[in-house]
Length: 280
Image (cartoon, rainbow, N blue to C red; front, side, top):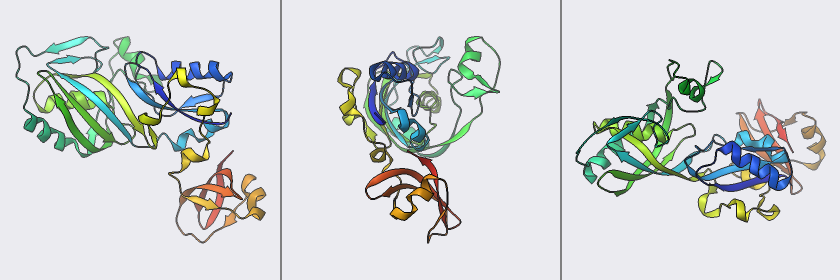
């Protein structure tokens, strides 16, 4: 049982709790996940089992798609409804659709974003959320993220539902707060579902009730975003032992290495030589 699971994490469960449940189902300790999903959020959580855990790093950098509901008129210290209310706007008028669309366009592209203090990001070796719960004073460093698409799907008298394609590391809670700030309104994230992580899509995900060994995806099929390199059979031993194979390529590249139809691992080309980066 080596491979990935396209898990549909339910709301109310941490990503770590989801991993622990998979460990119990398959009776193995070697389980990990790619891309933490907040406890209040639901949706796609790629989970690796046994030898697939070595290849998680090649999934964490994937771009993602979210559907989010932003609540206007209320702000919390966490950026979602799990936190304490810190401000309200009474009797405000909900912005019109054209105003919301105009703001949405501002966020498309590379933007500077400050993650929420209630997050798992480490500051000087300590989780920001742990320090925030203790009311310790600290500054969250900003980061550059990319928003590829931001679409307004629905508007009510106090909420806007958006769909977002974004780079890894983007915080939708921060996006919700910043969206409100552009409209001079307090705002917070009301609901969040992750629709996609790379090639892992919600429509193909499985719930815990549906989970069995047949739902485990082969490692190599989950790395199809990497170019395939057909390694000659006489170089298999060298690749598995970390020895170089000369190739006709001048740059640097990560590759999914296959020989005689068998997946061997991920290789890296550098200086005209192919070496193993991770082997099965």
